[in-house]
Length: 205
Image (cartoon, rainbow, N blue to C red):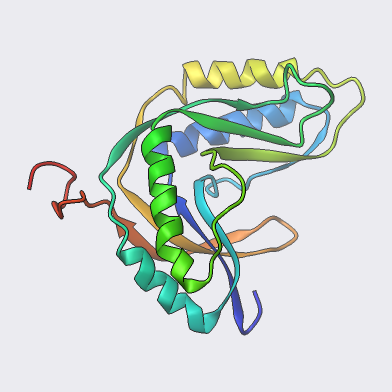
């Protein structure tokens, strides 16, 4: 981040129970794998709805205002298998989890965010939206690494500590400052879920 620009993104915070499970899973994977992986810093896990990149400070207030107009009802979600690289050729570049439940409303919310920001000059994403939680990025794959070990650890976590359903009740605008220990995030504004009719809890008004 410079004096003029703020690196921003819009994301869904994760339930605390998921955070604890992801912490345990990342630790298990780091002990299991010999490859060099840049693991997501504990507490930084999230589902990105839209990455904005470097935003001029003078435009941040306009982004905040646009996001306040986005309405969405709370919805349930559950983590599921993502990209461990197992079954593919070669080593994976990223280790991640997807959403086994909640992917539909999450994608709808991402489209609403995109529509709200497009008038501000943020062009629509060319790639299809895929909700995910990044566990780590493979920087150097160890020759002969058995990536089935990663699949096994992920399966154990998804049937245990990460099996609990979660509930999405807010989204957030965050800043990201890159550093040698990984990015540091700060919440700029939180946007609670509201149903499309204006009820505060997504139910009948």
